[in-house]
Length: 114
Length: 114
Image (cartoon, rainbow over all chains, first blue to last red; front, side, top):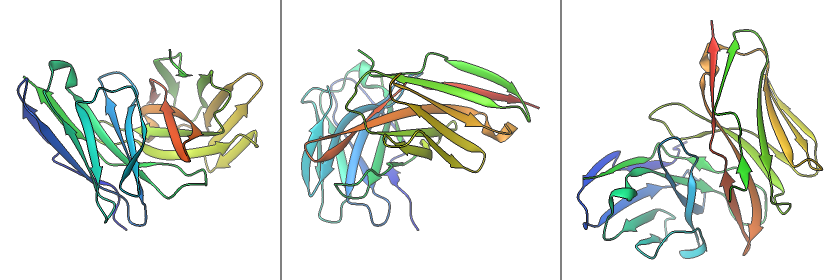
């Protein structure tokens, strides 16, 4: 039973560039959420996708955008990268809407901005 | 404004003793609470959860207690083992726009000493 997989594991970019991170949810899950985790902090919610639509969004600027594909996989795009975007980006998946369910996390993508 | 707080950044416990990790929240709309464990270079792993209609949930060595009136929950690990050494995140969720919105605390680093 495949868990949540994220790619790449590490990425180095420079200020002003754009980046795309990818996530495949746990088998059977249809909802994908993205989080940013800075050093020493808990995961901060970016947005959530269900049925290929952004359903909820945290307090992140429009430079952060995403997409969900028909197979439930998802991408996180960040434009005009800033030094402060350096963080661990986590993808979490869960099943459906309407029942309390835990989210399951991937191992993250470590993004470093130079 | 942190909606989920973990006021102890770190905790050290002797092997075999009880570990108690605490978490406080402010949003009365939260109705589902979770604990995650995170090792370095891995994503958070789901440990145990509790619905707001309960005050206790057990799973092996892990027990979560919820005090709704105090907006407080705790995770008890008995007996503690060296492999339990990790960062523990408390999370809470509420339903927003038909989706679960998860909010994480900043984490507590548990060290179990042999």
